[in-house]
Picture 1: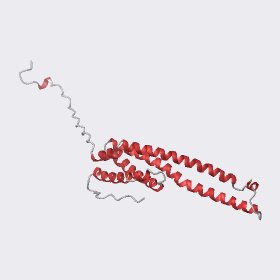
Picture 2: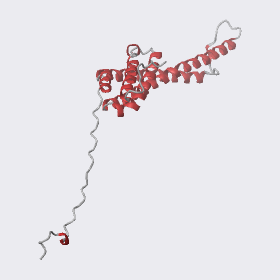
Picture 3: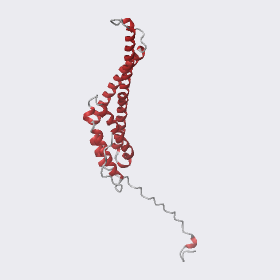
Picture 4: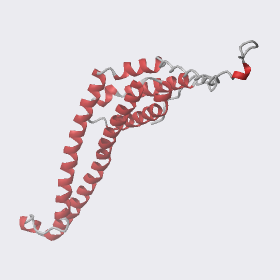
Length: 212
């Protein structure tokens, strides 16, 4: 997914002003996937949302502490959690088709073997299905496929809960507020003035007329 262009960046402006523009665009980019990813079959949109979360996270990790208040740092942590969860879902979405393709390939090879065993017979004897060359392999792959489907479903349910929690907690609005309100700079420490000790007056320096 190509990153959305950030306009009006100005090297002469304060870092916080440019960082605010970056965060706003990356946040809008992330939240723009919200309607589509409520469908568990939206594989492409879920993957693109993960990339958008990664971009927002990187900006916040660099700019949150020096430019914005404490919530921006918290938002960066939440964004990383979202990215990691979407990454686990993406791994399932990448691996499942590979497993399914391998299952189909081995199953078709065994079907061809059965056809050869049948020879010229008008029907297929069920006994010929015993000890097929790839039977154990594709049965194991079927178990792996079932595991990955169940894991993907569980991860997606976790994602939905996580995303709805973010929405309920006002993640977007709070982050927008945090990047707009600059934290008050800490007052510079006042220089410490150290006074030199005053030496007692010498008797020899007493005013005239005070000597015995």
